[in-house]
Length: 437
Image (tube, rainbow, N blue to C red):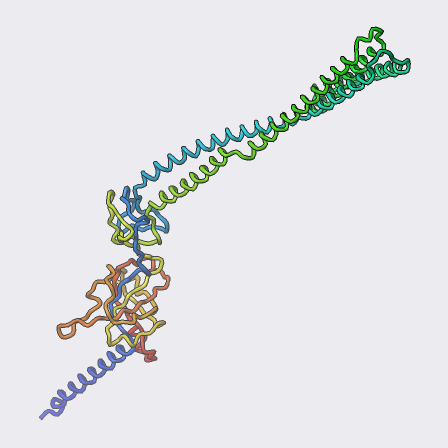
């Protein structure tokens, strides 16, 4: 009997047992240190698109499903022709009101000029009253002197008064003429010229009064009797009353013009209309701007299928935008491995959309869903990855979210890319753990 041949079956059994135990131990180490799961790239969030107005009709669509958009980019235009026509009408009305207000401003400037002119006339009227009072005083003096005889002293006084009046009149006239010449060269104010003229007229009146008085005293026939002097005094008194009434009229005109300048009802109505139409223009501008569908975030359009002529409302979801500023991976872990996973654990993902040379992408566990139930269908992950068959039934998987740090392969990833996820769990220090990872 060949003893060597008789031990061969036993050696084979021992070797097979050792290999089986080794494999079992290796798979045990792998199961304790590595959790495997399918993973799918998701956007950090999905933002729904809603109509910016209560109801409206699409007039133009500028983007299509799957297009990449930036924050605030125009996606579609909503019909705003009615608002634009109303805005145009409001703008025309604003132009009309502004032109009318300019006319009112010119009218107000004219009224101010008239007020200044009326004040100048009032001053002249007041000066006229003073002249009339002086003439009345002279007439009253003539009444007192009226009589058949005149003393030599009275005649001399009257003669000296006439000479003085003539000299004063000549000086006043010379002053007035000089002022007129200076005014031509803008060297003096017109009001000063007016005052010089009034002073000259006053001296002329004084000359006439002095002559009348001298004539009354020297005329041998004594034409100016007491009755004539009284009549002249009455006439001068009437002139004073007339001049005073003229002053009252001029003052009244000034007050009426000033009141009309302050109480300008039409201008107030126009100002109120101007403000009201400006508010209406701003409201229409806001409505026109609101009738533009803009991207609330940057990303990729998802299920965006609106068409020109379509009626929309703010209750209807018009599609969504995948916010791809940050990409995360949803790993669908079996329930028995769920409690092994914790935030912060390292992971590696081998994506089907990347070449073998690109190698795996490193990741980190971000969070775990609190419920091991399928989430609402998101249009990215198929329902099959949420479930696994167990004796003819389906047991829901649990979702673990992984954060993808920036790297050389990050820009190559797209929403919906699938891959095999390996999560290093258990904190094991066995050398084989790193080899399996």
